Length: 283
Image (cartoon, rainbow, N blue to C red; front, side):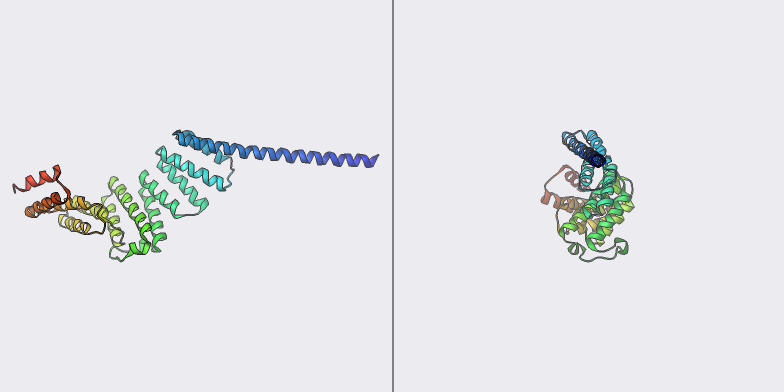
């Protein structure tokens, strides 16, 4: 009889343990299903333009991860960053990419996106830090160790795609610096890009405009001339016009008239150029 009772107790313990394991499993599965439901809901709201709702769902899904970071968490963070960009909260999106960099490594694509987002948010100091990291990653050179006198075929060394990415960042950061009234910093940044072999015609145009604003008209004209001779022609028309303006500011009216007439013959007539020509013919 006692033997039967012992066997019965063992069976009851096994049954209870199985029930507990089943309950725990169902809770775990329920939690996972809820997270996935929130993730999908966040993506749907993102696609529908409900960015605040998307961020709310994605935040809740993240909180259910209890600090663990796996593929789902990385995926949710990327969708959250996208929603933050769509809503115009660039600082928040930059912060999200900072988290991605902490948990998934400082990959260049994360650094580049955070750099761009900080530019859009007006956080130029942080953007500059990310630019330095990208420059070092792409070129193997620390920009702090270079001087404005250093030159060379840096663009060739970095590879076309990487140098193009850096050049785009340079232009965006420079514009952001100027919009914040940091013209000297913008000029220094552009000129360092030229020294690094990363300047294109647009950057030369920006440098020349900086010198025009400083009243250094001869220097401005020299820079515009450099830009006109740059391999790419993206800013060729602007450079030709601005070079003529620089000559006018230098009081070289004959040279300016000739430059504006050359501009019209090459790029077509426009009101600004015609106005300048009419004025210069009276000098």
